[in-house]
Amino acid sequence: MSDLRRVSTGAPWEETFGYSRAVELPNGLVLVSGCTSIVDGEIAGGGPYEQTINSFNVAFAALEQLGLGRDDVVRTRMYITHARDVDDVGRAHKELFDAVRPAASMIIVSGLVDPSLVVEVEVEAFRGDSAA
Image (tube, rainbow, N blue to C red):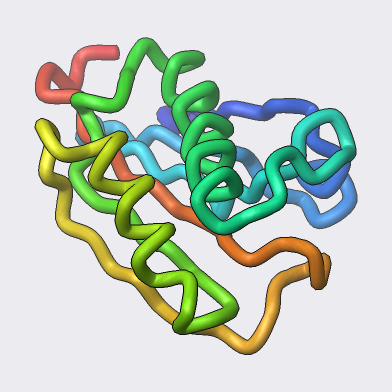
């Protein structure tokens, strides 16, 4: 499908596992792959609140490459490894998206690719004018 736009951030797993950080479909829907708080190969921010902010910032950077931003986000998914982190992750989400109010899910999972990670996020955005 040559009419897709793909974004790479140069993260090592993108090449190793063969995926794009984000893909924009012809209809203006943008799918952002799971983002964690790994920045320059290091986990940035220790707690769930900080990891959530950092993870969404990774997603926002991918959206920016397509000329989109936080206000274009229509859905978020937050994967967390502990139920005790619901409030911290939810607080970070509210801080980032309170004015946007995307559809959102928070899912508790048994683990992520690195045991130090407690949050992974996915974002879907929509370009209202699908002419890219």
